[in-house]
Image (cartoon, rainbow, N blue to C red):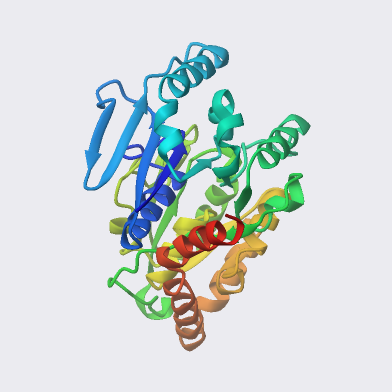
Length: 346
């Protein structure tokens, strides 16, 4: 049986896109008779440093967050003290944290792979960030990009590209004709921050509230704009099971691949708004981009939404096609990207 070590900054019970990606990937690899070891940071001191969940071994590194160098030294010291663990693994996979392996890279370079999951939240992308990814790519046997947009803004050409997957949910609903229902349930999913264009989503919600008699808004997430969002609806904070909220929605506002895929698979109208070119390309290069609403303007987004809401048959056709697309983007396919890459280059 092959053993893969996954290096990731955070892992369950921490909530996030990378955490979900790694957790689902590990499950699929198990089905292919590939065992996994997850090495992550101990983000909560109450979590055990070692544990086994099912067949997954998890090692958590006690880290110092006093400053960046102390943090790095904590990671590197742990890696050095556990180098035997890496020696016995068949494959080492770094999810955005290739630098962790630097102390023992020379002995492991032939089996080190990297997945770049997103961006650092700064636009334009700083040159130092581009240089760092170029270096991590050079130190890896091959790389996977989560989104084809990355090559346009960084100096790395991927060996393979994925957009994540979806766990198909049987709770599938359709959007009712707004002229009959006179109400709308809107769910925003993501961090309530500027890098998520939250100001524009707030603007869109205000426009919709003026046009529709009854609008219920739920903000699934947290961030600096919590108070502003609370003025227009309920803020849940971070949640482990967003599907509960998505299932009740008519419209889902989100601009991250996993939440977009999940909402589309459940038959929801997905709307994403961008504020700069990077996010625009992030959205436009997504394979399901033609089956959702993408705009840079709240007013333009509402124009597209209202056009669909007035035409029940067009809406049904649109979200049915969207759902059919998303339901084929399984985690099994994502795992095949990984295993296919290993078989190709090793």
